[in-house]
Image (cartoon, rainbow, N blue to C red):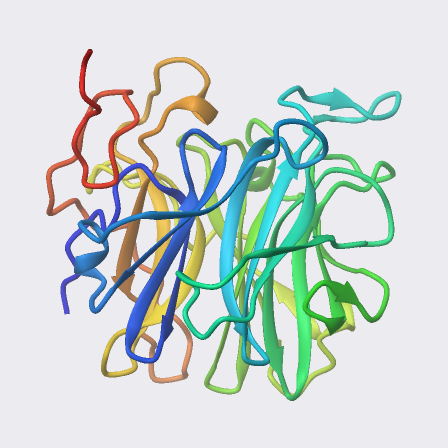
Length: 339
């Protein structure tokens, strides 16, 4: 099955959920000021699907800047969006010798309507992770009856910008136990430019829990790493997890894709796993990579070998036109009107 790529232009940190036979898409909007949703019957249809803004940043306060990496989840008959937001757009050095980071925290929105495009999105507030430092990229999953949160956060006692943590949940916005450290930047590929572990995503298949994440700066060095645990293991025990020393997906000049990462997982109509991620179509950006809008959402079928292990491969080439402009496009892929 060939999926037309990009699946959505200029949307980074993509998250795709298949629910009741339809695909729901959200991602970081390049203006970093809102949470958007799309819905389509096929992955290919997401590109032209109408985009709806379901929440906008506050005028001031802790949820007023740099709205990053929303994820849409269905838990217990309700809809939840996990997002990161900051009170300002400036990085800070939180302690002597600490890495400069932004001021994000993790927040949760809830909608109890059957359709997430209707009803009311209620702010359930900040997730109390146990300490007040830079935190972002929360994802959630339910396994053997327990809901877990996995996210990235800075520990001022650990060198770097963010590590990966897991905790059980009492409800979709409240942790039921302390954060457990799963991974911190340590390998050369994770510390290229910045010391980062972020963007976790969880896939349970073939008796294993596969936890992907991203590391390094957000340019062509950005890449995807992997933690693996047995599906019957105690997921709150760090010893249950094995970390791959090498990344599982990296930039590929042959296919013209750079900085693949911040992925999620979904399925084809016949149940095959699909890897969703963003990548850039060029190794260089004009100015700060954070503000270059051309990280495009992409998707490809993820095969498994005879032993049930993912065959990650390389980011596939584009099969749809890709803009080279640094202008933020309309949802339909066209540039905004010029006055």
